[in-house]
Image (cartoon, rainbow, N blue to C red):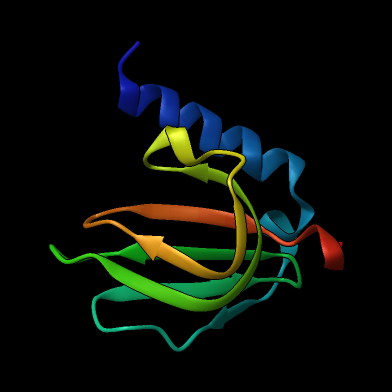
Length: 97
């Protein structure tokens, strides 16, 4: 199975076990140029760096549930999330679940 297939399978698994990804309201977030970020419900933030540049997304707390760079899975985010070019992360804030 390819890395992309593993990522897709694991994204589906994260969605199944995270209620806010199933029914949470979508709220677009202010983000640096080249980054698309949004909140689902109260506990989930998704940030996608759609550029060739490294960037920083501030004001985020939680744990990386899944990322395009799988080595980041489980990483703690404390106010500052660095995103490499073309990287995406799903962060869950367990303080609000």
